[in-house]
Amino acid sequence: MKLNEIGNRLYTGETSVDFAGKRKLWYLISVAIIAIAALGLLGRGLNLGIEFEGGAKFNVPSTMSVEEARKIVKNAGVETAVIIAVGNERLEIQTPPLEQTEINSLIAKVANDFNVDPKLITTQSVGPSWGADITRQALIGLAVFLFLVILFLTIYFEVRMAVAAIVALLHDLLITIGVYAILGFEVTPATVIGVLTILGYSLYDTVVVFDKVKENTRSITAQSRLNYREGANLALNQTLIRSINTSIVALLPVAAILIVGVGILQAGTLKDLALALFVGITAGTYSSIFIATPLLVQLKEGQPEIQALSRRVHARRSNAGREGPEAMKVSGNTAIATQVLPAGPRTQPKRFKRSKRKK
Image (tube, rainbow, N blue to C red; front, side, top):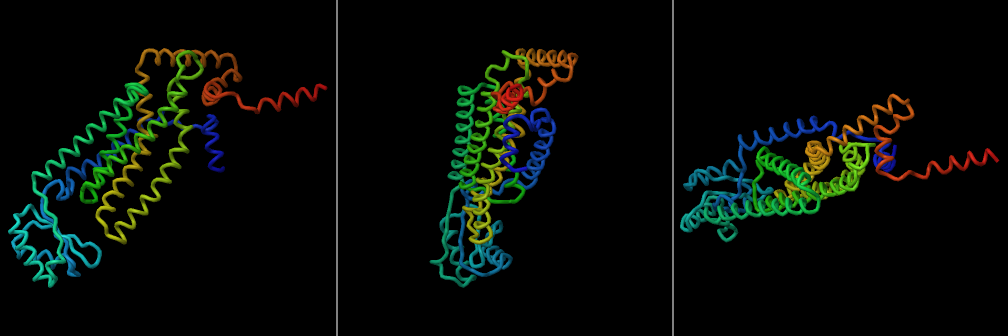
């Protein structure tokens, strides 16, 4: 079966995946993933860059091994340096915050022992107070973003949709941070930019689904053919192919950036940004399908009017079952498609054929 045929069957309700009905399964999967991320975060912690913790960074042109470079730096009086190979011809030395005289002394020592020109050694120094200020500003930016998201969703949709969307955003954020901790990637300002970007992407995907849910359930309490869960689940199925296609198109270039940044160019900025985008987009796609809408349905089912609707739908279908198999067509996907979508043109040719036989 072709992808467009699957999309048409999902849109009309002929084929349906019960995302909302199996929400406990999706919750368990998310809890397991978040638990693994939390273990990595608590066990290894985040590898914060000098922009957040403060320190000094020295970029040295050298083909020396990391072990040899670590011995030289230790002999120079720096016990806690972190040394990373950048490609095959450069080393990056990260140290705790140093005074300017200590920086000059270390440059001279490294230049002599590495046998390189001191002018070729580039340095970057960040004080601990500046790093703390950057961290505070990043947290403030995240808080402002979440507040504006809640405000927008509350005004455009409703409070329960805002709560479901925020839970999905926090879900994506925890998974992304956990992956950084497990892999030991350095957290830099590029990482913060990537995280804010993927939060926006996750929100976009969730809003598209919620908009379809709002359309399908606008006057749902005025009828008794389908309940809220079925209307929301149909909306999720109708936007499923779009969500998958959008995510694949977004992930392919990000994967290319990640491969080029890590495997070929050894560019730290590209690596930090691409990893956050790749993990975040993947988690955002999952949360918009398996977390946001099922959680919304769970919250809505606590409302008295939605509970009353479910009782009316159940009573109607019970009566239909006693009347015969034909009356049971009002249940399940057929009822949803008939209620939400206009009747298709398939009935017209049948009527024409019957009238032609009569003649």
